Amino acid sequence: MRFLFLLLPLIALVYVFIRIWYLLPFTPCVKTCLVLLGVVVFLAMILSFVIGFDNKPIVLSTVVYEITTSWLFILLYLLMIFVVMDLLRLVHILPKELLFNSLKGTFMVVGLIIVVFVYGNINYYHKERKEISIKTDKKLQRPLKIVMISDLHLGFHNQRKTFAKWVDMINKEKADMILIAGDIIDISTYPLFEQKVFEEFHRLNAPVYACFGNHEYFSHKDKALDFYHKAGINLLKDSLAQYKDVVIIGRDDRSNIKRKPTKELVLNADKEKYLILLDHQPYNLEESQQNEIDFQFSGHTHYGQVFPINLITKAVYEKAWGQYKKGKTDYYISSGLGIWGGKFRIGTKSEYVVVNISN
Image 1 (cartoon, rainbow, N blue to C red):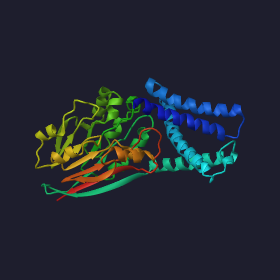
Image 2 (image 1 turned 45 degrees about the horizontal axis):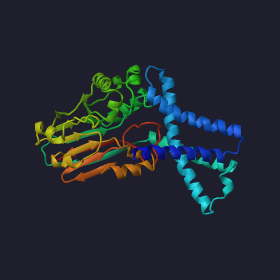
Image 3 (image 1 turned 30 degrees about the vertical axis):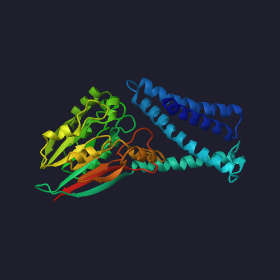
Image 4 (image 1 turned 135 degrees about the vertical axis):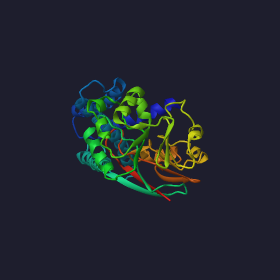
């Protein structure tokens, strides 16, 4: 099964480059150069993640990161386009001439890719505000307003200037507190320390509580801990904190196979308070229901980032995105404020969640 998992992407990659070769109306020399360029960019992405981006000029690392990860998504869409074109050719809807040495066919494919990815990039930069109102029987001294975000993926592509805009956006909400369900860091803390991104967290006008995500482990746990400390983030790593009439419980990420189960974490919680669980990856949602959690906030899925990967996340997770309810427990699975890789949202959205809790 693992061999098949690795073989299928390789077959798809070879298929795309063969179709590009046949489509382009250029000399064999030019075709070879263009196909090799595509292969080199793909291999550069793999090599970059193997050797890492640290200790290199941030500008260079940013360019390599943006180009190579964007190319990965473009290859996915080229695969879908060529499959559809070949199917249409087989049923005699699309003329064969459009797929072989065709200037018109090349313009069609390139034009479609440009339109889709320009839209995807614009859509990524549009941050959707999702507001939820929840009534609770538990005693509150006053209604609470909480901003919940996940998957910031700060690093080489979401840098300090970008995050500063997000801070301004969040501050406008004038929330009582801010909860972050993991993956604040993308793949490395190096650009975060170089640009002193932690200073932007100190501009947030409400206390910040967060749990770890899997990317905090990718970027080295100890360095992530140092960044959280400098940013003034209240890290809940298999621990809890109380703020006003709310108890916030933060689970460590599943990357830690020794993390505590929810039932153990709630033993020290005052169940007369409103219980919020931060758990980065939305697996085993029934655990929150069984342990009388009032609200669980998770992220991780990105809702697939681009179509049709969102269909895969829907098949993998009980709830891949959005509001959900099991018994008396409310859930929200966020598609994330930031994103991994190329800055494209196709069929999904970047969002932050504003939760109003009242009696």
